[in-house]
Length: 307
Image 1 (cartoon, rainbow, N blue to C red):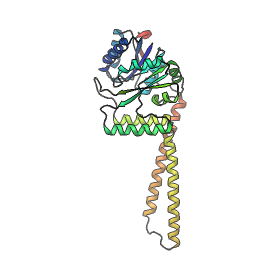
Image 2: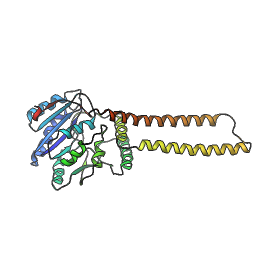
Image 3: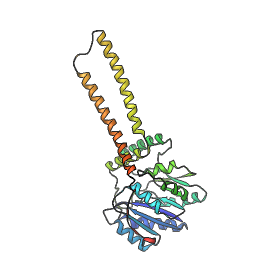
Image 4: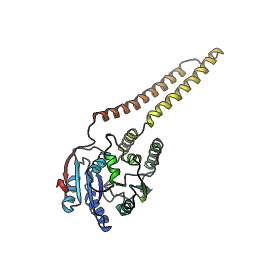
């Protein structure tokens, strides 16, 4: 059986469309499935729509979080609850085309344990958003020494991969990177990002920036390394400037006034505060990890055993 995990946040209009579309595609391909919707603390009627879909189709199950815990938590809650020997992750807005699922499933049957959905076309995405996404994935790809360019959360994984992911005790998880990190035999399926069938994107520039920083710090120490390099650069700069100042003083041409001193103080203070901010951010992540709180709390279930 194939389990399809579908994180959902304020997707009331998309739930019936997604349930009908995905179930139809898999039924047409003769693939037994369950559709597992995870309501990430939605404020609209998403949970009611999931309950309705579960009542209409016994293959539909639902989890509802007690509050909004984020997409990564929703994905991992779905992976933990999935029952299939193969598990796919699919966005509820159907920008990940369900029509690719049978092809991914066939590759899994051939022995591939991770079938990666790779973006051949990013769809109707702004130039600024595309550039920011490329920059972020270039940075984390260098940090991981793996190519995450054009990757997505659209994947199909074997049960062994799912078990390896859900066994990880860390709280701050980045599914897209961790699914690469675990390894296993891989294949790729290219797809074009589709337009939303209904509703609007829930991602703003602010939430995307926060998402990027959280995932970068969860999986890479690159910002900490950047602080080290900034410190080294400033030390070299200060040494060169100090030697220049001593030479000018010895020659009787020392600069007058305090402009240079003021600039040095401002630059050094700015770098120190930036460095402390980055270090503090990582300390906060360590603090969150050692508290050992669950990634999410499931308040309610529907469909299957939770009907």
